[in-house]
Image (cartoon, rainbow, N blue to C red; front, side, top):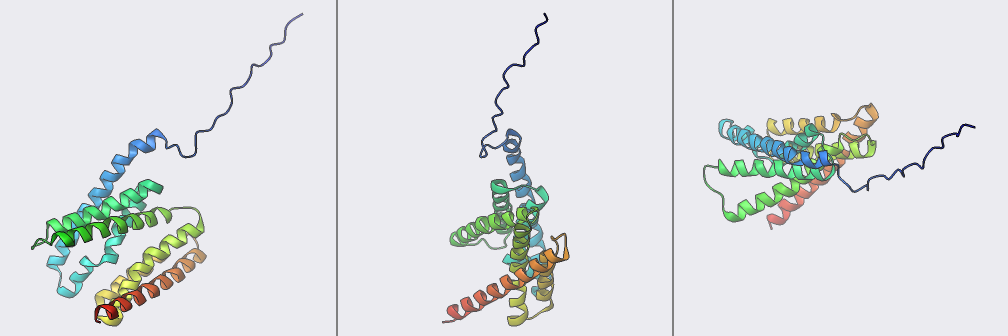
Length: 218
């Protein structure tokens, strides 16, 4: 009588802990940071050059905080990284942009200014980098929120310039803000929701600017 082979016990299917980062992702982090830093450094040099060669009115666009925020945003969106890597890449990108801007300044800023700009650059870069990663996500809420945030910040600064300073350059910045809000949705509903959110963010930011000016004026 022939013995029928019996299957042996199966090895348990043990999943990797959810917090464990694959080795390939860990190895990629230095390259991501290097590329983000290089992008920020190039943007800082370009901003300084534009500030020098453009007229006073248009040159202000090379030195506006909102437009600087799109550098880490696009750097992270192009690198297609998420989570901690997106935050670190965004911070590295804007910090590098600030550093090059300072190094190329005709007159060296004070240590206090360097500390302030550097701190703001790291924090704002991290937030803009996170937004750059979220606009690539499949979840509509995350994608719309990120597009509304980055578009609203740029639109709000443009609105402030249009209403309180004047000049065509602010209309251009406002148009960039609208384009940023509309540029990431795969459907008309996505784009409409992002634009509505951007308008709300812009209004809140404009109100904050006006309140700050009133307090500063005494």
